[in-house]
Image (cartoon, rainbow, N blue to C red; front, side):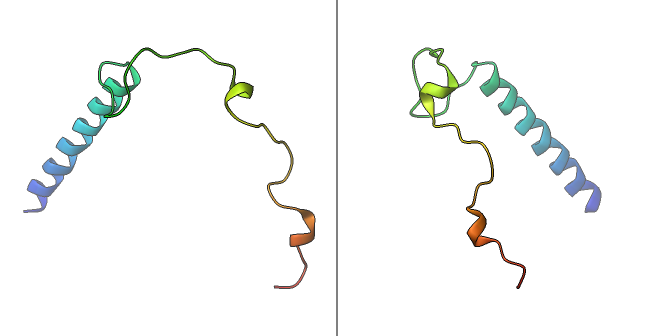
Length: 63
């Protein structure tokens, strides 16, 4: 029974790997996504911020 489950896990892992490869090479698209990829600069798609994610006033020495 354990060997059967190990084979099933290995099979599912290979299926997942193949699906990811298809998605990353554009051989397969997720539902709702169609058309060609468009090149864009990262800064035009989101706001970049550097530093700490939280204000320092939220950090204290006590618990």
